[in-house]
Structure formats: structure tokens, C-alpha cells
Image (tube, rainbow, N blue to C red; front, side):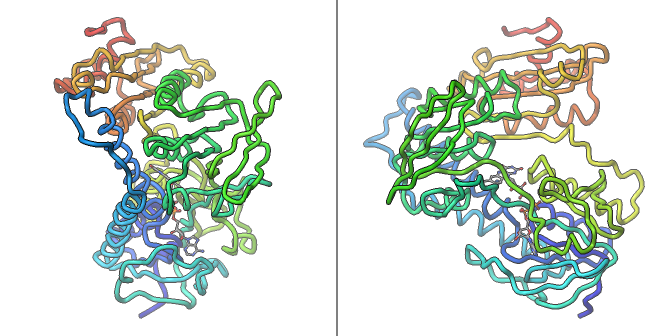
Length: 481
Ligand SMILES: Cc1cc2nc3c(=O)[nH]c(=O)nc-3n(C[C@H](O)[C@H](O)[C@H](O)COP(=O)(O)OP(=O)(O)OC[C@H]3O[C@@H](n4cnc5c(N)ncnc54)[C@H](O)[C@@H]3O)c2cc1C
């Protein structure tokens, strides 16, 4: 087997493995290097296993409200933490195996080990410095191991890892990252969650549903700081109603460790310090790109704030070297990684009309209860850009399907450019909004105006009808409110 390829991809997360498949479809001889787990963080420790945990949480929440649906549950619903975690790990393992199958099906060589760039067009794969943290599915046949490999094009897709704050470094015991939070061997009674981005809030929501006393500490003025302020405020109220304690404009200044607990010293805006003792603290203060030990410095690859600098097609400043996904900067989302990879490889293959990555149209979803989803400009950002806007709103409380589901708390907000009528932002909070948002993503991609949306027929009774009503509201034509 030759060690020379058209394309070598370092990292098999959603960025790397999807790029490899597209490369193979385009007739390029392709190999992927992976040091730990096929599917990367997303399939093994991120998107997928959290959604499995949150599904258990959702069922728990429904069971706790069974009475309001006219149903009686004999006895109390309880969670067996081992089984909840086992289900989540099983879901990951199934998908991890699926990536192995896809590599084989597309005749992509999998090279096990840790890659380092040695010179332009060459990598050396050595033993992994990261032992696999969960048993792998059978390694696909025909894979290669340590050695020197060459390629015309090398794509770095090495992902990211948890950011650590000085003095509050995760220790895997009392201070958890998402790795420990994903597979607890016991259910804590109380938790402090530091950071209220998507990862922090999803874990806070999950543990709260499991009956844990959770306090979220967020340094910014709102939870989920990237979201529209109005949506964030509704989500916060709903989370607090579920018993979550939330402190904003507050930071964990230090942590004292006990034998089996932590005490977080939380500084609030008014300068007061509050001590919160809990069983564990989850550090969810963001992620940093895996740029170390890759040989980037020797090749003179430009980096910025822990990420590789690229253009809209994944090109770095070094010819023949590309980067995609989390390691190439925010937003650090799986679908961004995948799309960035496809754009990159199609450009490499010389396809005509490849569109550069447009970061303004990447949706973001948070799967807490209630869910939050968005695409495009928030109201504040649109105003800061000096845009003249029209804003539409429609509440879940006025939608038949939402009421029938018993999910009548939420809002769909749309933002239009007043001059052109173009949809420039959509923001949602409530049941199933992570499934609804894609309608507006398609609309924005097609540069849809309010008129196109008003001419579109939405099925009844659905939650999606609220999307149309929100558009109608922006133009003073709302029907059901
Ligand atoms: C708890 C959690 C929940 C999340 N939920 C969501 C969600 O719901 N939706 C969403 O879109 N995103 C979510 N994310 C983010 C998502 O997981 C990432 O954006 C995504 O995994 C990035 O893909 P990637 O391909 O860039 O990198 P990764 O998935 O991180 O994969 C990189 C791979 O490269 C390998 N690697 C690194 N260095 C080397 C080397 N030198 N040699 C060989 N291999 C190497 C790593 O082992 C890894 O497998 C979540 C993340 C977390 C932590």
C-alpha cells in the first residue's frame, strides 16, 4: 500500500470524516489520521451523547407532568444513573462504528496514531499521546499505523478541548469538564456550572431534570450570551421556573476543594462574594483549538487565539495546508465543521462555483428545556450595524399545536431589513425549536423576503405555523394573536 495520497486529513471528527467522504466522492485518494476515536468529540463526547442524556431528561420531565395530561404514573419516576449513562455511551458507540463503516465503504484509509506535520506535504504518524477513553468498535480492516505519509493537500481537522481557567483547572474528580459530566458514576446532589454557553446550559438542564440542585454562574449579563437578549430572558425565566439557580454578571473567583465537595467563591457585580458549596463544579467556559504538537510553528502556520487562521475556503498561509472545524475558529459547531470541510475539499478538487463559507448563516441550537435556536443577526447586532429593521414576534401561547402539546411557553422572533424585506435573523425559544430553525436557515440562504415567506403555506396544526405568524407580525398582519 502506497503512503502517498491526494489528500491527508488529520482528525476524524465531523469536519474530518465528512471531508474525507466528499474527497473520495470527488475521486481523490484519501486517508484520515485519528489518534483516539472515530467521529471526534461530536460523536463521542459532544453533540450526540449529550442529546442522548437530554432525551432521558425530557422523558423524566414529561413523566413529572404526567398528571397534567390526565395520566397517572404509579410511584415516583427515578433515574438509574448507570443506565442513563450506558444508553448515552451506547448511542455514541453505534455512531462511532458507523464512521468506521463509512470510511471502509468510501475506500478511505484510516491511519491510527498521532500526526505531526514535518514539512510541506508530509506528516509523520507516531504513537498516540491520548489513550482511547472508551473502547473502540472493531478498527476497520486495512488501516495503517505509524509511519511517514505524503499528500498534495493536508487538511488539519484536530478539533478543540475544554478551556481551563487558571486556579480552577478541572481535576476530573471535583472539577469536571464535559468528559466527566457526560458519564457520572453517581448522581451529585448539587452542582455549580461555570459558564452558560450551550455546553454549560445543556448540562445544567440535564442535571436539573435529574433532580440535582444546580447553580449556573455566568460572567456576562445574560445566559447563552450569543443569543438574542429577549430570547435569552425567556429561556432564563423558564429555566428558573424549573428550579435552576442562575447568577449573571457573576464570576467564580476561586474554588476551595473539600474531600468530596467544592466551595465556589462567586463574585457578583456589586462586589459581594457569595460562597456556594456543591458536590461538583462543571467548568464550561469554552474550548480551545488543538494546535499544539502539530509542527505548525516550524512550518510558519499563522494562528490566532488558539486557532489556525484560514480564508473562506480553509486555506492557511502555507500552500497545500488547510484547516477546518473547531481548530479553525468559531463558531465551534459540528455543522460548521462539516460545511467548512466540504467547501475546502471542493475548492481543492477545482469544482466551479464553490461558495466561500458564510459565517452569518450558521444556525446555533441549544437543547436545554426549553430549547433555543437561532440564525443570523440578533436585534441588538442588527441595530449596532445601523440597520433599519422590522421585528416580528409570535408566542407559543397562541399556537394550537403548542397548546395541545402542553408546551405553550416560547417565542419565535424574526428580524427583517426594512428597506429590502430580507430576512436577516430568526430567534426561537420553546419546544422543538431546534428542528424548526432550519426553515429559516433555508429561507436566509435563498435571500428570502417577507413576501416569499407570506406566500408559503405552512401545515396545520404545527409549531411551524408560528414561523409564518412571526413574519406576518413583523408586517402588521398577524392572524392568531
Ligand atoms: C458537550 C458538547 C456538546 C456539543 N453539542 C453540540 C451540538 O449539539 N451541536 C453542534 O453543532 N456542536 C456541538 N458541540 C461541538 C462539536 O462537538 C464540535 O464543534 C465538533 O466536534 C467539531 O468537529 P471537528 O471535526 O472540528 O473536531 P473534533 O470533533 O474535535 O474532532 C477532532 C479529532 O481530531 C483528533 N486529533 C486531534 N489531534 C490529532 C493528531 N495530532 N493526530 C490525529 N488525530 C488527532 C481527535 O482525537 C478528534 O477525534 C458540542 C461539544 C461538546 C463538548
